[in-house]
Amino acid sequence: MANQEAPRKGFADALIRLGEKHDNLVVLDADCAKSNMTNLYKNRFPERFFNIGISECDLVGTAAGMAVAGKVPFANAYANFLTGRAFDQMRISVCYSNNNVKIVGHNAGTSAAQEGATHLPLEDISLMRSLPRMTVIVPADAIEMEKAVEAAYYHDGPIYLRVGKLPVPIVTKKEEPFKIGKAIKYREGSDITIISTGIMLDESLKAVGELEKQGVSAELLHIHTIKPIDKEAIIASAAKTKHVITVEEHSIIGGLGSAVAEVLSESQPAKLRRIGTNDRFGVSGKMDELLDFFELRAHRIVSTANELLGHRVTS
Amino acid sequence: MDFSKEKSKFYNNLTKTIRRHIVKMTNHAGSGHPGGSLSATELMSVLFFEHMNVDPNNPDWQERDCFFLSKGHCTPVFYSVLAEKGFFPVEELMTFRDVDGRLHGHPCGEHIPGVDISSGSLGQGLSVANGVGLIAKLDGSNRRSYCMIGDGELQEGQVWEAAMTTAHYNLDNVCAIIDWNKIQLDDFVENVKGVKNLGDKFRAFGWHVVEIDGHDINAVNEAYKEAKRTKGKPTAILAHTVKGKGVSFMEDTHDWHGMAPNDEQLEIALKELA
Image 1: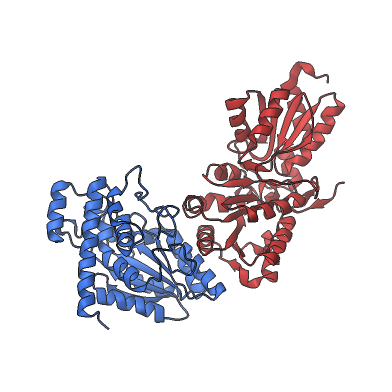
Image 2: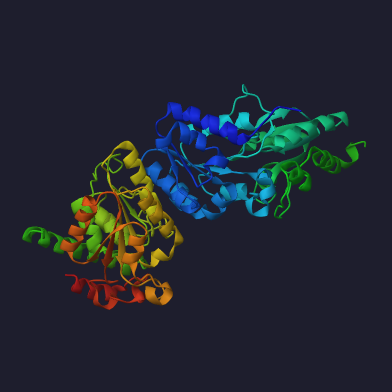
């Protein structure tokens, strides 16, 4: 089995490294410092850590004020409560005011696991993508998370960063460059394009391998920045393959699938299938069980590819 | 100590000028919020001309005191005070709410010098003020952070989340000003969802409370001084005011919460404010 690491660990490590270099980095949490691992930052830089309590709206507003005062705040909370409850604070006090606040949504996707539907954020990307000026980053694993945190710090403007809690396979490499807004092509292919985001890169890589065995040449684009999305990469690949599948650990409404559909339908019409959660709430279960439950698995990508390609595939 | 005769005269003139701006701006736009602007005129004037450590020529100066208009709809008074203080030309006030201007209905922090944050969605200002207060403490800076909140706005839960934060962190550099004009959009606050015993509420949340007549410039001035003197806890200035103050037909009614005077009404108002 591949090496595993919790994305939140990559987040915490990167945050501390940046904190050592930059006095203006401050961290806020809404009473989830242990779970979000921001307590590691707190232990290292107690004076630059603020527990605002169980009040996400106040958390985001306070972070906005800290940005007004010249700091670079990272505001942390569970993704669903943060993006759902504090949406208006992000809209007015952060984005409309153009404050340099980094919003960090934790416990993302299926990593909330047995907490059940209330804690499973499956709509956060959709919400954040709709905010003017918000950049939305969904890293694939702990390694890419570290690069994303660094890029977020140096980016001047609001950012939403989606961070998972539980260990997931390490699939990216330290030496791969990371640039906000730039897709990464993991495989060249000619029959179909698979576009993944976040931890779905792992299942997508497996699917590409399986498809190859079946004689299907799949191209794999990893989109870590859902907004602004890398239109050029999507258009170029779709122009070549004419068939596209998106894969995300999130609702197919408003997330990666929607973003890609917007690009394709405006610029490069192609046959499209969106894999994600289908307009429904989650349930309690271990993360692996939830990925099975939602069918966020390589076998579904493979079968969807076969269905989409139809006649061209031998079973 | 009361203002000198000269100072009193200055504020008498200034507040009249600002009230004239308020009715003229809303008349120009054909919309806007005169009621809660007229009630906050003394509070805003004395704050900006007596207490706020700001430089209109360098509005983003990092050591400045910050002001957050949490009741963001009261731009007529906010813009008027900023213009009179020199942040932008007074003539620009007559572009209020114009599509090609920057003086939007609710303040846009990015574009207007002297506006430290965008607001207009009620309840958000005190959290932002706390952010500045926390950082001032972290940096060892003496800068202060002020936030004006409407009494109806106190129905927003975030205000009380923030009030807990201010007190928890002993932010004596944060001062909340409650423009307690007793009226909100639909009706009297007490008829909609009452906020009475406000002093007890803030004290229970760990705040120092000063209760004043918000139209008495000496009382207003002393309240800001007391807030500065008060150490170890934040100060809430509960300012009893009259919605629509200074224009007889606008006073003490919710009708003028968000309505502009027509030309005839403007003329009457300006006569009263002469």
